[in-house]
Image (cartoon, rainbow, N blue to C red; front, side):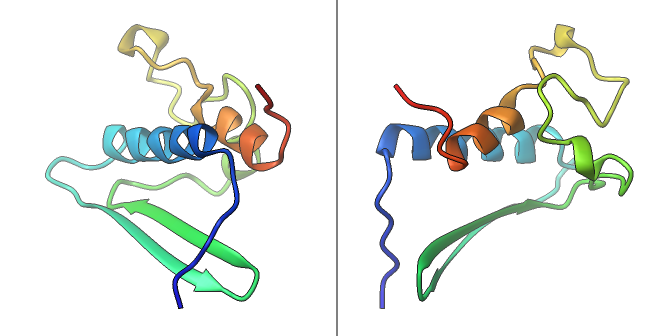
Length: 98
């Protein structure tokens, strides 16, 4: 059975785009990015993963904080604000309405 989701399509596209952009940007050279979907009884699940170095366990509790960067060596000069995951979380928690 195909998974169905009832969501704001613009916000869903924004979440997927943010996650894919991060997966590509923080991936290892010549690494892979995969997108998988599955259906659960009450949910459609999308998993995005990459073959990059991952996130240190100590950073995991903060990755959804606005402006937080697990990799302190990266700067805004690279064109990233540190907001992508915070925006994704706000959208998925229902706190981002247009």
